[in-house]
Image 1 (cartoon, helix red, strand yellow):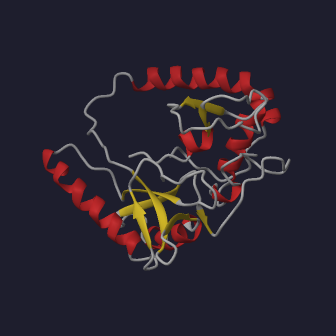
Image 2 (spheres, rainbow, N blue to C red):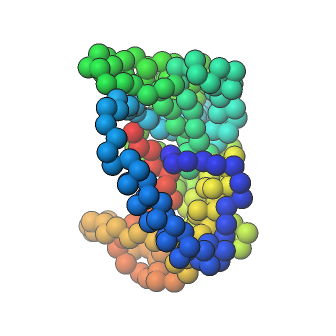
Length: 246
């Protein structure tokens, strides 16, 4: 996750007006920083890791697993240690795109010694234990690329439905409800809306599927280039933004 500053993100129409200014000053800043730092030597390499976790809730009675939209409340609890002692914590926690996702990193960077490699696994284990202690008995965190049921009907807890025809919806997705986008920072819904506004349409990734004698064609809807074809329709949120990386 990149820098998350407090503030009000601009709409695409507002951003478009400032695009040339941002490009010009971004290049100038890079050139100035390069000349100022190009001869600096002797720095210790600082490094770390990040793990993104997907929060899953299991319904044992009905044998169903759903993503739990509790990231905002969970982060509030996890960040209490950092707020009380910013320099003494062993882990840092940040939001991610999904309302069911959190990101954990070490409390401070590792250094330039070979021995520091031995600290990585222990810190990863500590982070998992730390967040697991705050979960209900029917919840867990999973370090997987994506939740297998993402985009299927009723894949969230609490249940939320996509609103593809709602003009107030950020995603207007056929599969991904706005409630599944992290609500605690305006960046995420603004990003979703701005990508759609810049393109003039929703992102639609079409993956061809193998057809056999038992398959029946289905019409993809909600996209201006939708047509009757053998493909899997994937909105960008499912393909990229909602994927967990490490």
